[in-house]
Length: 222
Length: 340
Image 1 (cartoon, rainbow over the protein chains, first blue to last red):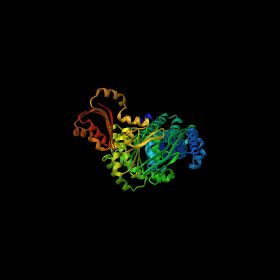
Image 2 (cartoon, helix red, strand yellow):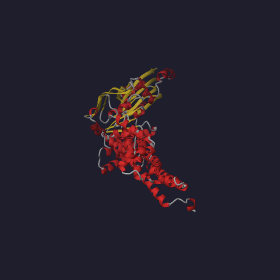
Image 3 (spheres, each protein chain N blue to C red):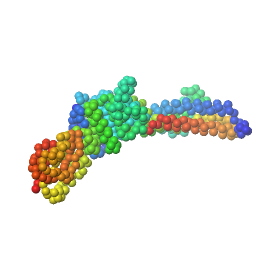
Image 4 (cartoon, one colour):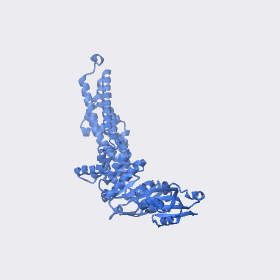
């Protein structure tokens, strides 16, 4: 019955493509989290009236973030070809997609981190200062813990955008479900493959959203 | 001893300078509960933030003990701040930490060993009456309980000074009284100096021994609570005193009272504190052949005794002797309104 409905679908290929998508998403998500957090902290801390108020650094970081967010992802991949070739050594396969995935989504996450940090109660920061806390103590023991639910839900949103990006990267040879749907589905007019690949991507998105929501609920003690 | 000299804070807002604290001089003795009262915008909140330099003073000096706070480097200031506790109107607890972890935070900052921290936290939880709530999160506590956590946290590093910025303004009257009692307890037990900012006169009345009245960045009146209460000089102080006694309508009332109670002597008795006066009226009735008719009055309690005014009518044979007795009491100011 399944074979009649989806004659061109092979389980092995789908499993491999799904693994590639998950691989790209998770590795890129880790990179995005680290770089996004750093950029977001930098944006927040160098802004007006904050610990490391510095107009120059703030301007440079903000410009970097805005430019990378403004460039459409599919163009970003092409622009990054030389960089990817230099760092990864190839332009094909899941690893080749990582630089573009991280550079495309880290600036997005950085803005979400900045918003999350801005939401932290100023009074709590003031209380920590009144206790004699250093800037580093305030960052690691006040700002980050107090913004954790917003940081996690921001990361969930970013992860879902990333899954979309991996599909796009797949279309130009990065592997994964997007690659599978395009080359083995669309180009061969095997619509069943396109359909099944899409369903799996949607399921992966749902799983990420579910996990993100669950973690956010668990850590939010407000 | 905290001494503050020529303290000034100017905020520059788009070409306009706003003087929040203006050439303020103040001395607070060790062990005092010192109240600073003023309406919003008087500069009292800025003032208390200047003491631990959460706001940098524009000029002036602040000395706590032998330490000149205003000339400390950033690094030394951080260490000095560990000796200055502070509590806030909105408690400012970390919602992500439990009660115990919140109280532990200042101990982490000052670098206390983990095992010592746990011990100290338990002591503090006991001190502020929150036993059993160690593992609750702030969101699960009432306002009064949150402020108790705030107080425990402020006391963690055994400071010499506690700054209270409108610490009871977000609480209901009953909770306010509980928190004030706790502050008073702590003041007595630990001998720590408390500087308390408020806009509510009854907070001053309940626990302070000295008070400064602020208006437009300046201290316009300063002294013992009783002095400032009984002889308010500035209009703003009189307005605050009225919060307790009700508006001063006596002047109009006097003609009416005089007409209605023409018999005997009509007296205004002003109580100026000290606890001995508690029985003055009953002594009067017991020792002399008179009756006392209380016509009007309001008495309220301060840290150093009762304060207030009674208007009474004396009827009977020994009016003269009774009045002499009253005049001999040094805690009373007597005014004869009418004597038939």
